[in-house]
Length: 265
Image (cartoon, rainbow, N blue to C red):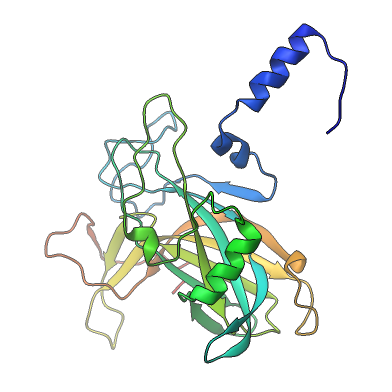
């Protein structure tokens, strides 16, 4: 531990820094990126107030998302043997005064290899990731099933919202993929309905989805997490999804559909 001579004011400042909540310290981690809820033209209500603040009275809600750039780990998985897994460490923060359930779907799409991967629950891989990301178990990292067992806690007045930490895992991603996007749905209840696209007869449902774009420097012989870079900014888009909607919906029916953001469907 480094010792320095400081005056009374500096000592008070040092003590105050030591007493900062851990969640605030984590939020300042340079390896983490924060994504705030943002509006989209297809939102069925005003997500933000005229002065740019979160509209907690709106019919539509969207949770905050914090993530690290994806990483790569090799794990012995029963029935598969040595498997290269790509994973995304993330935290979900609920800025609203009432709890909201996060039912996630993490889809990784390689743009240069044209492959699609949904995250998988792999206990062996999750345990290996915990040893890297949370060896003390303080964060209680969840997977895509256990993360929705309980709602994301509501924000309390004059308190820092408590994040819920999770991990999404994709095994067997094409090792030559260098450009890919991760689509995160479940962070919002926003959706829109458009007319069928012939020859289909069912309406097209698009869910409000967070799109994160990345690039990787290297090839199958250089599988290093440090080679993965985020390509900003993060985008809130409406992306087609195979879901069953209730008879009564918040979303108005659109007669025309805006062109989807590539590579959204």
